[in-house]
Image (cartoon, rainbow, N blue to C red; front, side, top):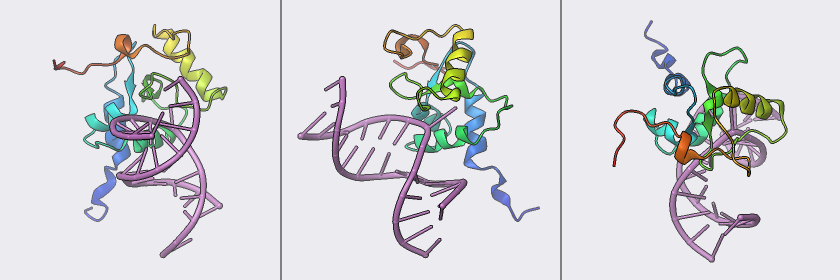
Length: 113
DNA sequence: AAACTGACTAATA
DNA sequence: CTATTAGCCAGTT
């Protein structure tokens, strides 16, 4: 089986990281990219999530952009779904429709400082 | 194969 | 605060 040695695509690595986001927390695309050892490729993270099937177990809803906003097209079904799923996890949006990252951002081990 | 597109982000102005 | 520019790179056209 050597041939396609690259079966482990970038996507798989991204999904692996997203799966680690705990319930009630959110992470940004750039953060995921960094944790997946793909610094600067936040865009690919969004691309990977976009390719996920509807029945995936990957908690894609916990990934938002650096402003704490949903990156999906406003008013789209996916946008609404993401808000609902996050709301069920206890994540609240502020008046501007953003998630206060200072409060909900996921901090994987080793919080620096 | 070249041009487009897009679930991003940081830096400028 | 908004707008523009540039870097990124895989999937589509």
